[in-house]
Each structure stands twice: as C-alpha cells, then as structure tokens.
Figure (spheres, rainbow, N blue to C red):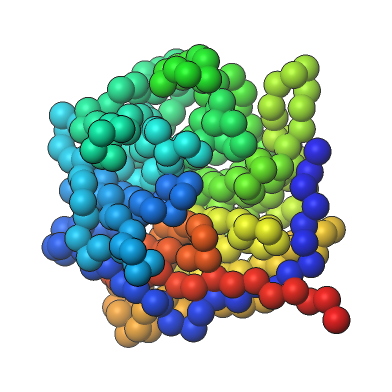
Length: 327
C-alpha cells in the first residue's frame, strides 16, 4: 500500500553548509550515499577506482578527510559509479560501470568495511552492462536494484536469506519499458512505494508505483508519472525527500539541481525550486567541451541534509527543511 504524503513544503538552503574537496584533481566524484543513521557519508571516485567514507563529527558536520577507503582492483572496484548502504548499515553495495555489483561487509569492532568484496553480482547471468546506479530496496533490503544503461532496464536481485550477505546472480525481476531511456540514476521512497529513475537518454525522469503480484515485488511496468520538464539536461541522479516525497533531480548538463513537489496526486511537471551548484564560469568551461558534463552528479538525503557531488566541486552539503502548508 502506498504511503500517504504529508502536505509539506520543502526548502533547500541557498548555499552549502559544508564542502568536502577531493584530495586531488584525479578524483571524480560521481555517486554519493548516506548510511541510514546519517553518521557516514560515502562517495564513489570513479577515475581512481575508489570509494571514500566520511564520518560525522559531534558538531553535525563531517570530517574533512575520509576515515576509510576501498581502492584498487584487488578490492573488486573498476570505475565505481554509485553506492548504497543497507538500512542496517551492515552492507555497502557499489555499482561499477563495467557491469558488476560488489558488496562489502561492516566490521563491528572498527566500524569500517571490508576492503575486499564479500560477494559480487557479475557475469553473463547477471545481465549487467554499464551499471551506473544501485540501491537496496526498502523497507527490508531483500532485493538489490541495479540499472543497465545499455539495455535501458532495471534489474532486481533477490537476497538468499535475511541473514545472508549473498544475492542471487540472475535477476528475479527486470523492469523494461519504453519510459526507460538510458537510465543513469535511481531512488526509492522511504517505504519503497515509489521508484524514480533519471533517464539520461531523453532528459526525463520516470516514476513507478510498487505493486505486489504473485507474492513478488514489482514496479510498473508503465510509469505513473514522467517528468518532461524542458529544463532537465542529462538528469544524472534522483532522491526522494523524507515525509513529503518531493523529488530532487541533478542535471549533469546544467548547473543546477531541480526540486519537484508532490501534492498527493502526482508530481509537478515544472520544478518548484532550482538550486545553482557552483560558479557558472566553471560549469561553462566544462560544458563547452562536453554537453553532458559540468553539472551536479550524485545526490543523497538524510536527517535534514542534502548532499550532492560533482567532479568540479567535490561534495557540497545543503540544509533541507520542511514546513507545513496548513493554515
């Protein structure tokens, strides 16, 4: 059953409350994720085959330098593009563009994660090519979702058992529909009732409702809403806001992120807010060379924080707040 959306307005602060810069220009930040508690922030540095983890300080901000990293081909990483923490934060899933998902387990004594994968979803049975995004499916993490940009599809992999770190290699379910066009980013609402996919191929965002058929979880296959806003430019990543289920979209080919409101019936076709990310001169310099680059990439939301990453500006953290529209 779909959750009831609260009548709330959503606001993003005008400027970031914190910025975390990469240690070198070689680190291109593409994907980002909060742990469920919000105490950890992970980012995928694609060009250096690295995942970096930052720890939140007692003052609410994050340490300037990562406390842990997973790097190198021995770690199973080959151009990591996105990552996702399980809701109990015991597993970290990393999507790699070459077509595989690596899972890393949390060490209870140190709070760090294994530097070699405890499990991998790969090979021809996995049906993964150009895997740009991954997410644990809420609310129970019994499925892992991963995009296939090359075939414009979304694969769902079933977990073996609730206590197991392994997933089945072959997809239990594949979402493939004409509303998926070179999908680049995905996100679920908190309860898993909604799925949003950023379509790099036709500058749209598709939103699907969750259905249960024959005791199996499925989405769609037809989208309930397709955002066809003309200001979307190569949408890269998406995130639902808590409570209100507004949708935030990053634009790899534009110097802003876009916020779409949810009114209980659907989503606005035009953004109710656009937030510029970084100096426009920097964006124009990059975008002049490649129309698909220069704008914000990964996005994550947790506990009143909205984090966005990009190769040009590292990680920027904004304040996200909700206000009631009731009179």
